Length: 168
Image 1 (cartoon, rainbow, N blue to C red):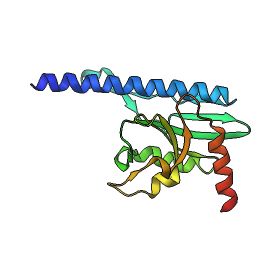
Image 2 (image 1 turned 45 degrees about the vertical axis):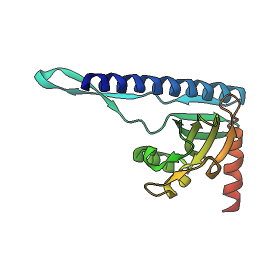
Image 3 (image 1 turned 135 degrees about the horizontal axis):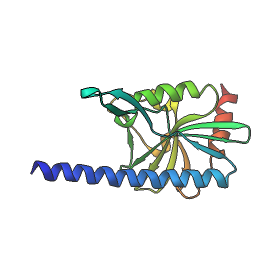
């Protein structure tokens, strides 16, 4: 029984990882099509001395997933995929939010969320993510709706950010 649960958990993790990789491919393709250069921040590793003096690799948290550069602007993004119709507070990683809030001083920064059930990509700014409370969720209409994953355009994030900066 326990072994089957572990197998199911590993299988679910692999499926989620493949979905995430597919979304990241869409991001790169749409960025290039919109004349942005996507820089993907790789997962990090550190080495530590383990038992018996052996070297052990330890995964290190990265600040976020992508920096898109183009049109004299930079966009700082972390990507998330959800099968739910809302994006819950529990999916926000504190270290990413801190880094995205810092990056937002230089340009738009936030989560790019793929709502699989609606086939919709939505941008939630770091400030919007910071504003929601535990046990709350964001609906797609709470963010900047960018369209389907194959055709969203990063320029809309820049345009929205410029408009919000002008109104402040």
